[in-house]
Length: 299
Image 1 (spheres, helix red, strand yellow):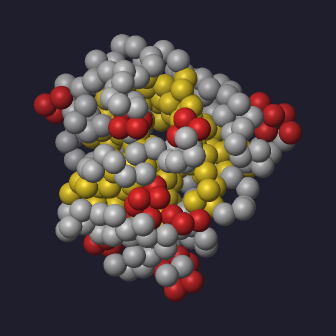
Image 2 (spheres, helix red, strand yellow; image 1 turned 120 degrees about the vertical axis):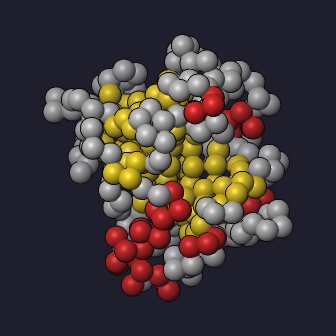
């Protein structure tokens, strides 16, 4: 599903976006092919699996896919488009679920960054940019899904709601935001519960167990089930892109996901798969049998 090109030439070309992770392994992602658009109001996307990037949570004419509209570090990037107005705002994400959760905890996270692009034609709020998220299991037990959710980075909340740059690529180091030594501000969306939008907490604060009553409490042992980037919902029309998503746990080499177009990449996907939002991570346990079998190692 992905092509792994670990040549010195590619690694050298990627040093500009992974300077803080000099040992990063660059994974060139070329699938799934095509732009996935869903005009319906319910989430749709690629069938759930692990160790592959998927187009997910697409609704209300949202679109996501690897294209050459905004090339970055090569000939492509992850393209996002949400054309609908605010009342029926579009949404589109790309997600990656880890098949092996060994060592993938919040306390063991040592790097997290990505590049984003906002097209100047976007009429969403001036501070809106593509969002980066960690898919989290708060108690570290994948069988108890009521404590799962997303730890979300939106640069606006770390940047005083300043207007985002347009028509240029921007690199955000979430783990060390603007060289501060601290992560950017993160907020929590818990599936089936709601949003803990206390815009004062960085990663250390969440690991320390700070949470609003009624929401799951995170810790250093919370599992990072996967990665997510996307746009919407609750936005006016937005067009942009994401590339060079980097994550690292412990002292293992960081992984940078570089999205590239191949000659086989072409038209859009016309058969979206319905995917109830609340069922996504419950289904993941069925897909990743080995994950469930070895979960005690990560608790």
